[in-house]
Amino acid sequence: MTASLAHELNQPLTAIVNNASAGMRFIEKGNVDPDTLHEIMVDVVADGRRAHEIIHAVRQTIKKGRAIRQRIDLNDTIGKVVHMVQPDALVQSCEMETELANDLPEIEGDPVQIQQVFVNLLSNAFDAMHDTARNRRKVRITTEINGEGTVRVNVRDRGPGIAGEARDHLFEQFFTTKDDGLGMGLSIVRTIIEAHGGKIGADNPEGGGARFFFTLPTTKEHLS
Picture 1: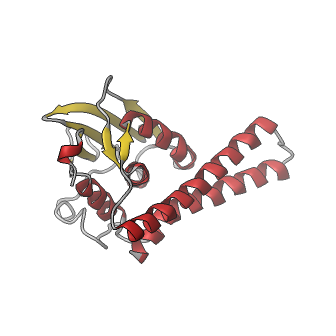
Picture 2: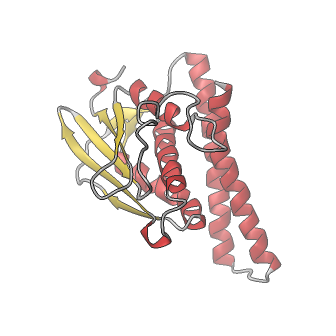
């Protein structure tokens, strides 16, 4: 649990440092635009709250032995996460596109955990495109009604794709292809999705890149 918590908190804390540093650079250069600084501070507060929510969720899970569950609009969650990770996307020259299904049924689950699924998948997508030409660094997030009481989410990057030897180990704890990786991100994602009664997988779609996809049940009866 310690490694998992460290991994999850690293993202919002890094975002806080990056946003605060950006604000300081604006001030040092004399570019004290109130609207820009306000946006930066809003993001700092949002990331601070996200770190608090992660800690709170872990404490509640330990105390109650289970995660918090409520109805979740996945399209709305995606919109919030896209805004949340936009500074990281800009730093890595990545563009995000969304194609969200109309009237997508809600799921039931822990909103902080589901948010973390998207944050992890998008962060991995940005990292995967490090060597991709800048004009091709695009991440596409789509949602669809999958039938049989489930919805499906796809997150596709334009990186080199998944190497054959890595494909069978992607979601294993401590497995990583990154020099500075902990090997926790995709393991956490799989644990969250499966705890919500879903399934996750990955492939190399036609046209290049890698695609991570998962399904989640839309009714409480399907949840574990």
